[in-house]
Image (cartoon, rainbow, N blue to C red; front, side, top):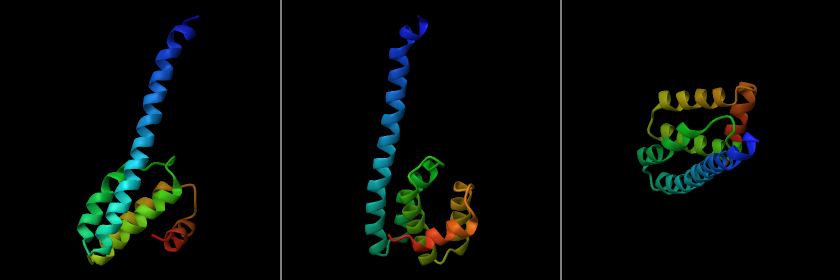
Length: 115
């Protein structure tokens, strides 16, 4: 019977968790499009700043398409800023995010990702 008493609380917590995930995914989508505009305008540092929160929020449950697009744009901004260390660091972080896949497969998909 305790489960019945706690069920509304559990549902509330679950709703908050799902709502927070949806909001952060939507925020990343908006940040990506804003960052893409900045990138196309040559504002590479702004591109990186806009995408940093998304990159920090990604985990193994994140949408892979969104993850690859955000990382591709971020890495390209690093390259345009002539910051190879930044690009390499983000590549390695992407590889570790998809640790269940071969490094070559992750890099190939990154290379094939269109932004």
